[in-house]
Amino acid sequence: MASMGKVQSQRIGGRLTITLDNPPDNHLTEEVMTEIREALEEIRGDDSLKLIVFRSGIPDVFSRGFDRKQRLPEKIGPLMAAFGHMLYLLNEIPVIIVAEVEGSCIGAGMELASFCDMVLCSSGARMGHPEVRMGVFPPIAAAVYPHLIGRNRTIEILSTGHELTAQEAFEIGLVNHVWPNREFSERTMRYYNQIETRSAVSLRLTKKAIEQSLYEKVLVAIRTAENIYLNELLPSHDAREGITAALEGREPNWINR
Image (cartoon, rainbow, N blue to C red; front, side):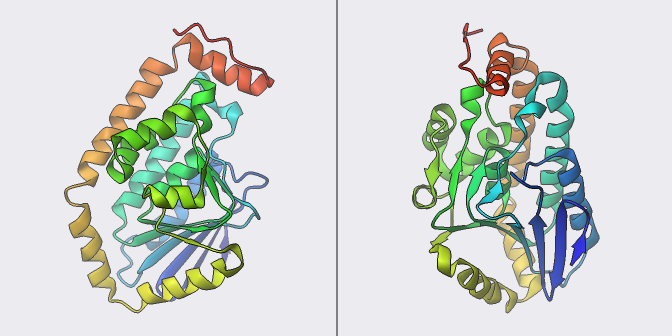
């Protein structure tokens, strides 16, 4: 297993496992996302690779996304740029990508999981987008979720901040499988073994065929959502007030501008 600090990568056969290890919350910092990109760059062009798995090395948490302190307007730009670069690289790798989610999967952590091709959850996992409580929204989710679960479900999740159980996420199509906590490790390994017995070229071209009509639109939508977030929302009073209030542990004072 190769360790780069807060991310470990391990290649076994046709599978690359990327383990997030940034306690206590597995925040997606610039450092973490740089390490993920480095792990992905190492396997670009590897025609024998069949599967990439994202998992957590921390009990009860997949990732709680961005640190609130990094959401202030003067800090968020580089963080979002790093997140976008990581997702674009993921999109360019023609390999099946799976998120293995146990515990809390929040904010940008949920965006990372949902950007993968498949999401496997333990029954105790919980997923959600609390950004609306800070007066902001998650740009990647706003761009990607309508293609996964439809317009109305997306609006509901992002505008209420409701935290989903693994079963609720499965029922609306954000999750492929939910398995009992005690069986999760065994069931995921059996699942991966099914994929790894297939032809690598067949898997790559199957994914390519499916994505042809989808991800060009998604990438344009991501750029649009990021522009709205950075240039229209963040300059508002309520965005700064919501983020500041969250950092100070108080209720925000909205003026609706």
